[in-house]
Length: 415
Image (tube, rainbow, N blue to C red):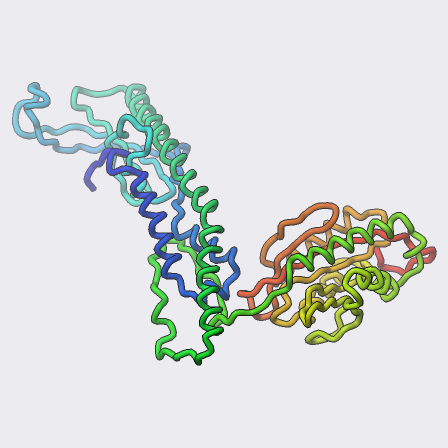
């Protein structure tokens, strides 16, 4: 294996610029139907992985020495006149330093460096540092000092490289949510134009002809799963109306807490009816209870202009097991166009913090859980789940807990 000087090749910034260009090319050729039917966060994550670079980690604490070896070196009279003859035999002592990451990065010159690293050999994921006794035997202390100085220099240059790589990765994470959203909006406009044009769509024999394969790294990015069906424009639940319903419920919860007599003896049906009564005052009578939607009756359903803008399941807390059943029950009610829902949990206990933690754990450990949502405070906790059998679609679920008085004779198992 030939020797090279570490961090002395082409510029690292040029390599990183090409990685960013690769991610951009990938986004531009990404199949429109796949982009429109995949969760946006999944596409962003995929694009970031395409352009991201793993930092190099030097395992200095795992340095090991190799047995001394005799090697024959060519004599260069121009460099040292003391060696006579064309060749000479010297003793070589080497140490091996393992590392993690792409070996290519060890050859690239980071920004801010004024010198290259030591001359080494790279074999697999090991850096081999060597010292020859050209000028006579070296003491162990001198050899140790030589290797430690080389390792110090490698770490110094590696810190510069990793800082540049880290900034590159953070730049990708900051840029691609906006880039993916813009590309998705472009494809959506095209699809809407095609839908309004009114002609039937010509069917291609090879539906995958436009998907260009991507060269992946060793641990490569994974394309988000998506529906096999072409994207068709669809309406979704209005964010504004969904947030209005949740804001109203937060206000009603505060009212319940200020007037405990309202809920002291109420069961699930009565609690739901209290919420419906108040919601109807805002949504002009369009909030209904026990309404059929897909595979059952949902506790609260608000329809505006024949659209489901809010779907909720109401339960009195009866332990994590019952709560997990409520999650499954809610998911079973949602049709493919329902993308926003809520779990409204009434707690007859003073340990609201502990029960909140149990509820959050039940959701995050649910097999349909995808990620946390934007809200996580005393008012509510948001989550993103997917419907049964369709991981490409996302359902936003808000968890709200209502603390109500305990009954005089509570039934067993409510803690």
